Length: 245
Image 1 (tube, rainbow, N blue to C red):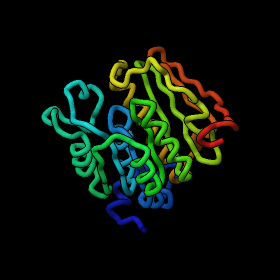
Image 2: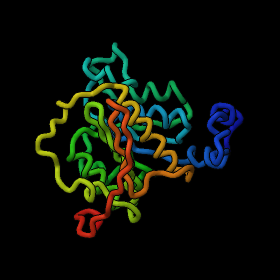
Image 3: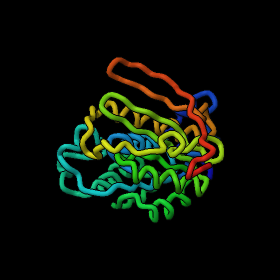
Image 4: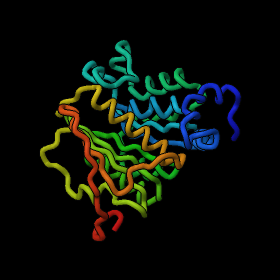
C-alpha cells in the first residue's frame, strides 16, 4: 500500500517529523480505529485522525444533535440540530479527507456491539460519557487484544491513559468501581477542554498505530486547565482484576 503523489503532498508536513516518514504514513494509511462517542472528545479525535491520514474510522454514537451539543462538538453544524450525529460526522470527515473510509453506527455501545466491532479494528478510542459503555469497550479490548485509548474530562479537568492488553493495566484495574453520583449529561464542559483532550487521544492513537514516539505505558496523564497543571501518575496492574487479571 504505497503512498500516491497526492498523499505525499497532503501529508508532507507531518512526514518531516523526525521518526515519522513515509513508512509510518503508509502504516497509518493501512490502519483502522473505532471511536466510541463523537462528542467533544471523540469528535476532535476523529477529525485529527482523519486529517493525519488514517485508513478507516468506525464511529459509534447514538442519538440526534441538540443545540446544547454545539459548544464542543465541532463535527456538527447548527442546521443539523435534530438529525443523527453520526450521519453529519461521516459527511464532515469525508469532505475533510475523501481518502478515509468512514463506517458509522447510530447505536449505544453494548457488550454485543463492542465484541462485534473491536476485533475488526486496530485500535479503539473510549470517549463515552458513562461507565457501562466504557467498561464494555475495555472488556472487548482486553478479550481481543486490541489497544484502547481511554480518556475522560469533567469541567476543566481530564485524564488519559492507554490500555495495551498484556502490557498495561486495564480500565478496571484503575477504576474498579463506578462513581454512583456521576450523571451522564450533568457535568460541565468547556468545549476547548474536551477538544484538547480529544487531540491528545488522536496523538496517542497515532503513536500506538505507527510505532512513532513514546505513548503512555503504565502511566496516566492528568491535567487541570483552570490553572494549567499537568502531571503523570503511575498506574498499577491488579492481579485480581476481573477483566485482565
